[in-house]
Image (cartoon, rainbow, N blue to C red; front, side, top):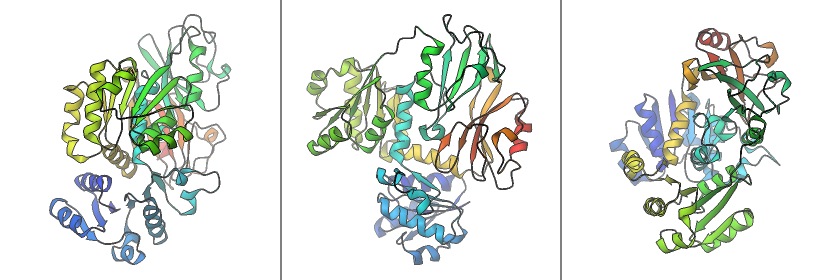
Length: 449
């Protein structure tokens, strides 16, 4: 695959290394001549000193023949303009890195559609999804970056007092944004159908909007106590802001410790339900005063890696239940595993690595990929790319006849991710997520691809 990357910062540099190592034909355009000289010596890619938002420059690198155009500079406007130009000049797939939430706000105009960009990516938001996994629901199925956090997978056990016992799934009247995927009973897992009847102690796996899934907990277990989780964030960074949005439910009591007074004021105005503390969390005295030892989660997510590491160690020593660390620079890439095991930091994430992983999945030439295994190895959660030649293009979900052991659980359009209804139409370029038994996997994939 021919890939053109604009910008050789932390994210662009790492993407260049990762994609070139996996066999892609990579061209990287960077404005800094000094950085280009350094990259030319270490990268197995074509390095060009130039302006990625110049139409002439893009024509010179034959952008019309590229399979993927990735604008990854730290400037949103440069990325949006570059991608828009690349699309106009014939690039097949354009992806822009963005930070400003303005470009994600579709209330007035859909920026992505207006500029002809195939995908907007925020590395800090991807990183926040990784951090939120453990905080939002410690018992959820491990599906990484599932629809970029728009759709979640959770497991609930049917308790003895649940009114769901003895009922068919078709009679539960669940929110349309929720789908029961499979039921694990007596050591066996089965893909759920409308006729499936729930029994006591069934372990049910659900797919859907995170808040809708959470609201169902009491229906499965009326006595389940919902505890408030105390979350402390060190730093009012973009990662922290994205994480605050993911933890907007009242069951999360969020505090932010931030050094910059102006940023504290801004955070307080934007998130009135969040407690913002002006101070430096590298100070052990401040951590003690704020009783960090009683926090359920402590997340160090500033732009300073050394400060993040130090505060995580202090928070862990003071007794914080679960400590999470954000590492921004590539200098620590080889130490991520060490930080987790030796220093006792439970979750370590890197925006650049999370973005690279996300990009590899999106740029994969494979028509399907396995996201997770069903309990007991009875089947898989599979994501399928719908090509223009697929027999299901322009068909409604109800008109696509899947075997009994297969079920659609998510539909990812270009701009949104939903749990599909019977009336939703599958379009070329969509991605569908389904659960399928091992016995039916090949047959189902053949009918979709």
